[in-house]
Image (cartoon, rainbow, N blue to C red; front, side, top):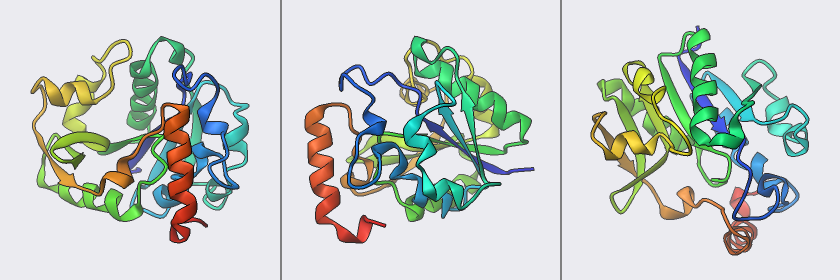
Length: 208
């Protein structure tokens, strides 16, 4: 049984970028692979990388995953083009098969998450919250950990809604941990990408 399972949402179509953003080189590594080292070094028991194709070039170059062959798997969301909720539900179904007690939802375009942040979420979730979210200035963002009793509600999400929609409407109760805004930076546009690449190159301690 794998108690804490991560769901790495990487099946989007990068509409605002105009091309596959996860394949873009943030440094010597594609954007989509940057966060994987920290995730794999965290207290996550298993990682589900949800993509829309088994032949994802950027994922095939993820050396940080190859070092943990039994700790992750790639699963395909055949309806990913219909919205993020389809990828999320694909991940939830597989997590349930693996006996998950909690899931941590990650976005593949958030390259600067840290293992410390992830471990704080996992630790706080032991207090029986439905969820524990990351937050900047009170705004809740992924990564978000959901305990098992929230799984059924997540499966009701439709379209391009993410898990955050359940946090906004009060369906679930939980808490958050405050983190540095840089750690939650997500990349949607060319301008976002250029900023992130500059930040990444300036912070040599983040480069492996």
